Length: 154
Image (cartoon, rainbow, N blue to C red):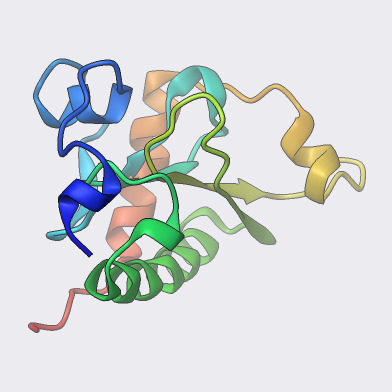
């Protein structure tokens, strides 16, 4: 699959493409994970519980159906690493993976930590308003980063 088949490499009206080009700020606390295909950092403060992670594809693709085999392998390797690090570092019962590219058609997936409040789980939990402070995001990111295993050389 070529880049031309999947759209432009850098789309100026795309938040994530602008971020790659330096036109948007990096996540609070920086990126905790970077490889040739993906970056992972804390989610946007006005949409995140403390410790919510945002997985961003480097390439402008809509969803995994547009990804190369190498991109899919990379995504499949990083997701469980973050689940383990978030469970251990944030001491949470659940981590929810959500990928809804309705507002920005560039692949990004949220990893939301959840300790159910009054039994809230799943869609009920995800439908709540989420936000956190910069200090909460930095502290939670540091706890997750401490528990990320080193990547094996490929």
